[in-house]
Image (cartoon, rainbow, N blue to C red; front, side, top):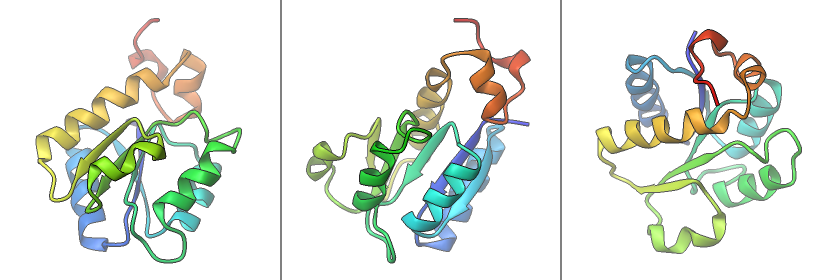
Length: 139
């Protein structure tokens, strides 16, 4: 079982493409089509990283981030934004990283990798994230 990544995007084809790319790297994925669904999924099974689109129906990425910041379970989970919105407009969102759509596949993978391991403060956190603690790096 790999690290779980929550992918939040209203484009089902793009969600599936990102999920397949991450699965090839050993990640498990959970998919949501809007921020409201993502909050429910993240609270039920906190992911290691959240990949977030900003422009979605029901609840957009900005509103998702507002809820996430004040949620004691979700506030420490790193967010990687993938969006068509100019990255310069995203500074106030407070994400770990932001990539412009269309994005480079390798840059996407390396960005998720970079923000997954550092999100663990202990081996116990690895277990709660659905990760084999034996593979977690020592801190």
